[in-house]
Length: 254
Image (cartoon, rainbow, N blue to C red; front, side, top):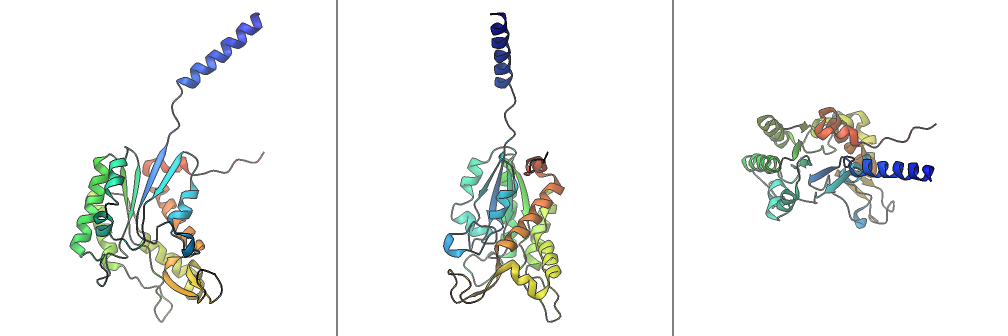
């Protein structure tokens, strides 16, 4: 009977400790952007947005909510009421990664935003996120595969990427310069091997693209993972939301 009472006492103590133990530290990361970040439908594969592999880098305490959409700009994302539901659901400590520019800068697209508009919209994404005590991070538009005749990577986002940098400085917001870092990655791969990072397919190579594909904007699975790795490494370096504590770590082999 004494042993039984001791056992029951131990179990009761464990239950009390469990009941008052702190809840697991949860983290939610929102991805706000365009097709280079977005989840892809099956009919688009192997085209892959970098937000897809990004969600696999974390342990079970993290939820990655990828709201990025093909063809969107800072302006159209708001005009289509895609941003307000995010703001309404934000909780203190949530991380909000914002990457636009590809569609903002093209004057022939309906999604075009002037340089002044682009800057104003970025300011609003930052202020809206901060109004909910979330943690915004600005990301310059990721590089297109664009080499000059001498095999040197040439940027295509100079003006709009610099606006992102300016807004980050003005608001003291963490910045991931994905434009510059992805250009460096492309240069390291070189003119031919860099095709492996993008949705380049020969005719008959994939059933979704029977005539082949030469896309220097959207990524292959490899390219998306490489871009996602850059973003993760920078977030850890910047220590946004103590994110390093949430990165998946494989179990130690005994």
